[in-house]
Image (cartoon, rainbow, N blue to C red; front, side, top):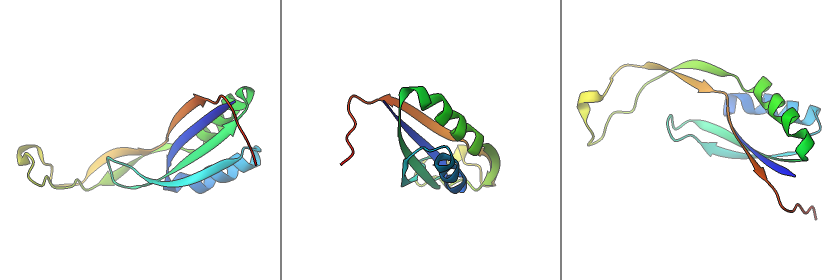
Length: 109
């Protein structure tokens, strides 16, 4: 048994949720916030058998694509203003950060 923790951008969460259900994966969605861009994320907790991990990872990969986005940087409050860029910059967002953990026991009450 494995626990898959997938952190995805909010824009991808509904599509991923539907795809997981279509492939008979049960998941719990948690609202989360990214540290770098301070933007909304969704964290999925997916419990599955070892033999279905690759399929779950494939579903996540197919539904959570990285893309470029223009963001306005946060001004440095008390930081070094020499490196502050006052105009929007293009960064890569989206995709998924995925952790696969072994589960010793699973109980469903």
